[in-house]
Length: 231
Length: 396
Image 1 (cartoon, each protein chain N blue to C red):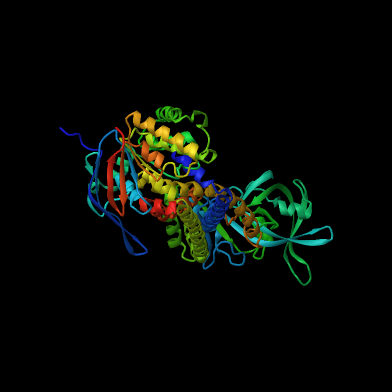
Image 2: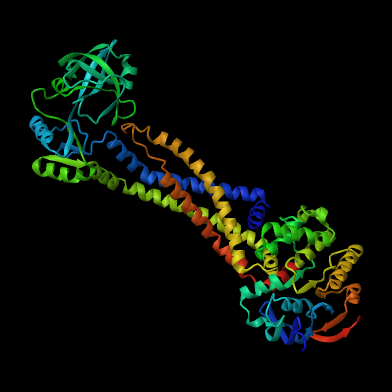
C-alpha cells in the first residue's frame, strides 16, 4: 500500500488581484511528495514559488484544482481548522524571520506551544531543548531585536519545530543572511533532514537548492522541471 | 504569554501609549465627575433631610420648608394631635425669626430658631450641652456666631427681637445663657444662627401672641408607614403643606432635570472621546503591525485569538486609564465641589459631587466596556486580513 503523501497538488491554479487586475501566479501545478523528503522549489522571480509555498502551508486557498495536506483536502477546511493544521502539522520559516520583536527568543518558541495548550513548564523545557538544538541556549532571554540575523533565523527554525510538525516550509530562509551565516542555516537544514523532518524550501540560493534531494523548478506558474538531485 | 505579548506590544511606543492612557484618564475623570454630579446633589439633599431621621415636613400651604415669612396657625392643638398618632415617634415645631445683639459697638443680626429640644431634627450638639424642654433661659449658638461675637458656653447674652429698622429700638429683649455650640443642619456656610426653646423665640419674634410655627418636623416609627402617615395628616389638615422627604427629593429631582441632562450629555461626550481614542490608536497599531498579525495567524493562531489580543490591548489601555481617571476624577470633584458649594445661600451640608462606590464602579465599568468595544473594529481588521496577501505586502 502506497503511503499517503504529505502534499498532493493536482492542477492547482491561483489567481489573485492586483489593483483590480487578475494575476495568475500558478497555472496548473501538480506535485506530490512524501514524508522525510527535502525539496527545493526554485525559479525566477514571479514564477509562483512563494505563492505555491503559501498554498502548501494553508495560508491561502487555490482558485481551482485540488490540494491535500497530509491526506486532508484543504479547500474543505474551515478557517479555524486551517489554523489548527498550521499550528500542529506545519512549521513556517520566513525570509525576514518574522519573530515577535517584543518577546524573547524562548518566548517566541513558546508562542505556538502556548497556542496548542501546552503547559508552562513543559513548553519552557521544549523551548530550551529547541534552543539547544539550534545552538542558542545562551540567547534564550534576549529579545528578538537583540539577536543577529542568523540568530533570529535559528530562533525562527526552532519556533517552526515547536509543535513537532510533519512539514517545514521555508521561504528564502537564507535570503537576508550573509554567506557564512547562510551556510550555518543550511547545515541546520541538513541536520533537520537527517532527523527525518520533511522540508520544502523556496530559494534562489543554488547552494541550498543543491543540498535538497529533489528540485522542482517553476517557470511562469508551471512546473518546468521536477528532478531528483541526490539520493 | 498572551499578556506579555499584549503589554509589551503596547509599550513598544511608550510615549504614544502614555498619551493615550492620559487621554482615557481625562475622559474617565470627566465621566466620573458627571456621573457624580448627576446624582450627587439629589443624594446629598436626601442625606441632609434624613440626617436626624425626620421623614415628614409640615409647612404653611403653598410653601416649601423653610420659609420664615409664612406660618402654620394653631400649632399647639396640631402638635397634640400628632403626638397622639401611634405611628409617629416624634413631632417637633420650628419657628424662625430675625434676632439681634449688640456686640461691642455694633449690632449683629442672627437667624433665631425656636425648637423643642427633645423633638428636633435641626441640629447636632458639638460642644457644651443641649437644652432641656423646660429651659427658658438657655441658648444654643453655632460656630459662625461664636466666631463673630466671641461668645462661649456659659456667657450671658441679651437678644433683641422685633427691631425697628428706623429707630433701632427693639420690641422685645431677653437675656439668655449659652448652654452649647451646635451645628445647624440646614444652614448655609457661615450663617449665624442661634436657637432657644420654641416659646422663647416665639416671644421674641414677629407674632408673640399667635400660636404659630414656621415648620413641623415629624419622625415616623416605621419607614414603610411614612407615605401613609403623610397622606393621613394631609387629609386631616388640608390647610397645611405635607411633604415626605421622598416627595421633597422628587420635587428637587424635577428641578434638577436640566442639570442632569447636561451632566448626561457631558458624560456621553467624554465616553465618545474615550472610545475614539482607543479605537484610533488600536487601528493605527493594527495597521502598523499587520505583518505581525499575519505571522501569528501563519504559525497557527486562530482568528478569535487575534481578536482577543487586540481587545486585550484595548482593555489594558482602558483599565490603566480608568484607574488614573478615577483618582483624577475624585480630586477634581473635590476641587469643583469646593467652588460650587461656596455659592451664597446653599446649605453647607449640600454637595454637588458625592463620591459613592456604586457610581465610581459604574463609571469605571462603562468606560471599560466602551474601551473594549472600541477595540472591536481594529480587532476585526487584524483578524480578517488575508495572511498570504499581508505577508506579500509586508515583504515588499
